[in-house]
Image 1 (cartoon, one colour):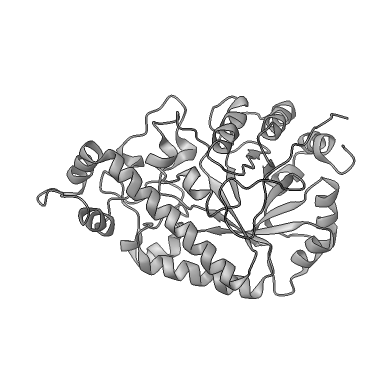
Image 2 (image 1 turned 90 degrees about the vertical axis):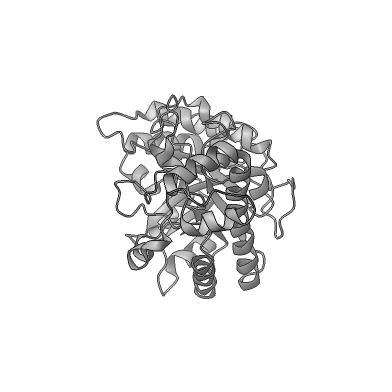
Length: 362
């Protein structure tokens, strides 16, 4: 059996408070997209694997609440995953919702579902908050896990040595340009690509602050709405897996994610440290966690269980084990797995997880 020393985490606070610490036990979590078997049997498996927190997709919730009830029965907390600014169906109905890059084009990803909405569309923000409140009225979850709470940068496809181009700079839609133009003087005779270049050259810092304000304010508003609907609910954020050294402070500059600011309204930041997918060393997982912790964040790195995108490659169980070890190093507050469904199909990697984190491992 491989020994693991779990470190003390930070608190899941009932109200946001900067720098608060003192969680009784580490988060050993997994993302789960759906329940395709008996809920009781599935939860027993999760419990045996040491899981104490599930970050659950919409496929995990049904009218009978079987999965939620079984999790709570076994002391497992549930965070419902909500994609905030990703909504291909809404954009199909109203193309003006789409976030526009510096080349004047909407989200460029080939994946059809990967269509992001402009973070400054107040009508969409109001609708999304209403959806969350309606969900909480039906489902007694312990927390919300906010995904796509950022601008449209396609971070999964950017290798470490690459400098992100103008196609990764968002959002230059009419709403954003009007709102930014109310603060700063902009030329009135430029098309979108020209104006985008002008802003990035002359108002780079101001533009970054503008983007971070949009994202942080949405997290604040979601927290307020969620707490009104369910007092004491917790908030987690799917965070970009970058430090300030990545892409010239890319998390803030490209994604609008200011970790220090977000930590005032979120209980957990879970950076998507899929290091192998991103062509990075396993040590990058700890680097990201250490950086975020310095921003007063409670950090729970999310690691990949198997190959993502690199279909012609191999992700060995030994590599998975190293990723687990890196994710658990101080000052991490635990680990999050992407995903349980994938791990179930990888028996050798599942064995590594069980040896390190299973119920009988420590």
